[in-house]
Image (cartoon, rainbow over all chains, first blue to last red; front, side):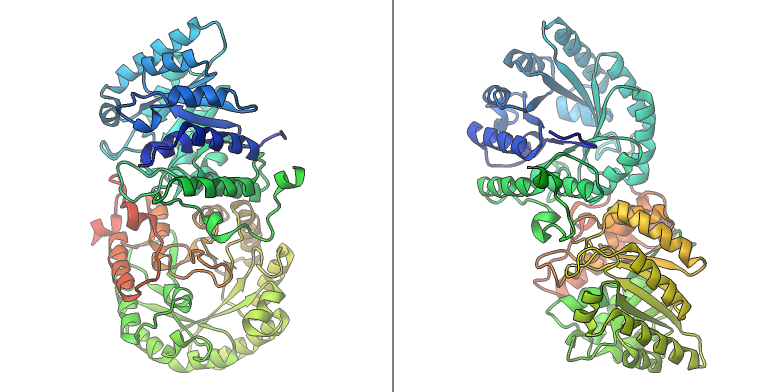
Length: 311
Length: 311
């Protein structure tokens, strides 16, 4: 693997699949993972340890996580909504676990039926459980609705910054700032992320954008300006937003990679391989609309695919 | 009209309509113009003075231009491909005429069957004819394929900068830099537009982006960073690209306005009125796919529509 300027993490298997009607088999999910690694995407959120009754798509979380651990070169992570989920993820042997809470208390209540303050306490218990393990497990924390909330409206920057500080103090080794509902704009992203970067010091920071209102890639550029170098994306923009019917989901992985590589920023990812995987996923998910300008229009003739040159 | 931070110019009636199969009536085109003015969009490229055989959509160029001149508050412009077209536009009484040539000689040959150098000479003749008029006519010049070309590939920055200088020397009172085929990326836009702005001095500069590869709005942000304060957009992203089947067209006017206003940049435009006009256009153009994240997902609850507050 070559050195990378920007890290792109695939969340389509988690944030994307939780929105679709078709339940993929564990084998399909693992094929998706393996082919992504082959395309250069080594950081993947492979599943979510939520109760299967809540999201049937993740009933096979243990099988997928176990299978993902066997894929060479893959840094598999899982989302956990609570201590119970975190313990399941630890038990499976995952080396990266990602917890999320919402900056908007109203959103947190709706999403996990407890207040943001209670979720912080839950995170502290997860961090304590992680510290008890006799192996290294990277514990990341995400701040959802960091740029606004469909229920509560405006979210104060100070709330987000306070949570970042609290989560780092509590043992988060990485922070993801998320525009869960697609409310962020570039000026807001630049302003908030500069403060987050200054506050976080050496703790790695990532951004998680949704393209709900078309500003996903412009927001990536604004976060890059603020110094952010890790972004979540979803292959084919799979997902959607539970609070906005017909709206698009996460920023599209292949378009994000295109935007970065076109500017000379190395992602280590081969776009043409991504496009081939996308076709497979599309066939597996009939009736699920995928987004993506590059899949539609093709790469520019002037585009230099350095990964393909290297490979 | 309030003071504006950024000028948004509608080109859907020209760049958009030249790509669609349905020919709108002159009355429909003029209704579109009048309602755009009512929404705060006062700069509109209302038609193109090309030979009707080439683009049947613009067979009514005289009627539309004449009608547009009667709309209060509208600064109507027309695209002209050559001296003959310019003379027709002058004769109708338009106060703004927009000429375009391509930085890519190959693209220029394909588009208007002459070299870029010949198009520069044509522009000089148009500027001379404009100087003969005993009224003020604003003559703008556009540099197409300024960020790359589907035929020639890479376009050298020096070619674009040389053309900007030549066109200003020849009498252009405004320059539009266009990413005709959707090849531009933000780093490239920022780098080129900074040089164009420095070179142009007091001459107003605008950008014309296509969203063919999903980077349209990120490119607007990059151009804003470089100091550009005028952008072309197309309502509903109408248009497409003749060189990329199924690809999206110009940047979407309403999404662009949303992005700017969300960041506190005044456009003087009421998005909700734009969305209402968009519905009318969609009904007039069955089977033409319109793009637009705001039309799909709605404005954020946190969005402050200052124009609506003022109105």
